[in-house]
Length: 213
Length: 213
DNA sequence: AGTTTGAGTGTACGTGTGTACTCTCAAAAG
DNA sequence: CTTTTGAGAGTACACACGTACACTCAAACT
Image 1 (tube, rainbow over the protein chains, first blue to last red):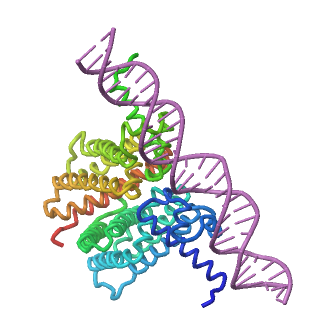
Image 2: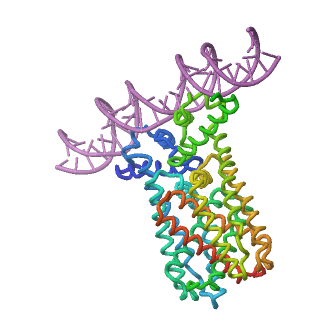
Image 3: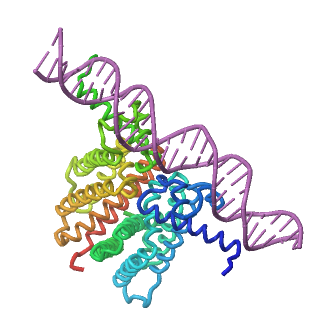
């Protein structure tokens, strides 16, 4: 039952991260005090400094952590069981798949999504910048992904980025709504429908779009 | 140069509202202290209570105020100088008009937009609820507006709501980006392009969409 | 075995916080 | 002219805040 020194340290570090995520469900990071976090973890305030330089520093770590679970979601959304027969079916499949990934992953990583959504705009400047940067990376990934879809040949790189931006901001809105809804089944289903329809509108609408105007 | 009693009271009330909007550009409402606001205004902390019950109460007033400037923007976006000749031109005109309204209004009411964007997710629960409610009203207005556009006949009410939701969340994202950019011309132009293209994609894509699947 | 290391403790400080209370003093009401 | 009213000032309190400093004591290193 003895614990090595690094193990123990890692355990309290995790406890601090978890406690902060928990406290951030009801208030933004900027409204959080070092003492509040320490009390929640069960350590003395000064012990906090053994792990993080400041609340802001902690926030940056949480951003990285949160985005790695977002990446898991996106990876799931990209995987198909069976390749769809035609274009229209493909778009439907993409939409359905993405939304399914959204509603199954979000509850599991609720606190991460909520954290990102909150701190994206309300966080301290460096935290906001970190979130913005990560979202940009995701946008780019999504853009190259869409580029491989049939009918996307006519699209310019710029337009693909713009389309990806639209999809990311829509999905972020839905993720936040899901996270806030908790486990209320009716809300989950409503968001699910809205998200799926929006993706279809955009993707199918995209077929009629031509970058050359 | 004498000032009536109600005039004077209204003046400090405004000063409190303005000071709070100013302070909220760098931090969320929840991280704000009553004393900070009072100091900024130039009154003693206890005098605050003559105007608002709490910071949260003040927040709710700011939400109302902010949304009335958002409504101004939307009204501007709906007004046309000359009716466009055909459907495609109409969609382009709608998109151009909306985006023009966005980039001209946002700088004027920057602090209001920033406040909404921040507090929508990071604010105290009652403030978040107030923002959510106002956005829902705007969505409904937009939906009935789109319903009058040619080609929208085939759309169900539900789908119109879903489309409006997509547009509102996209425009909110852009408004926030504009507000954060301040007066940096290159950013403004980039956001402008992105917003216009997204609106066109969605609106023109919408022509190809059929609610009946 | 003896020594070093470092996570976590305990105490102490100056400062900021919300709020209760009494006081002022000019505009409004009589 | 006198009285009432109410925005704002001033003082006071108990409490939470970040952080500096010296301490403990078991695991890890030599």
